Amino acid sequence: MALKFRLKGLAETFIDEIRCPGCGFTGRDDQNFTTDLTRVTLEGIVVVAECRRCGEIFVPDTQRCGILNARELRVAVENDARETGEPLFRGIEAVRLSAERLNAQRRGDLH
Image (cartoon, rainbow, N blue to C red; front, side):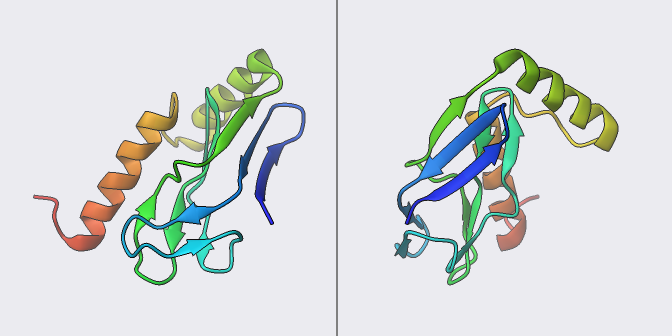
């Protein structure tokens, strides 16, 4: 069963299969992966997964992002960033860098 992430009328993302780059575990649902760190960006919903087996945080390569209303998505993302104080992520690359930073913190590799 595919994972589906939707913001009604704004954006949607689908993932058929998740493969952890840390331990190689593969899954088709959220039983062995958490997606609490998923971000909404100007390019759509970017899923961030955390493997429950090894703790690796990553952006699955197999996700398919779609934007239903680009103008309204931009307004929603900008308003949310302003209201919450959370950083505004432009797209998937910014989210990947954030995931890499979280892994470095988890491993104690940041200096």
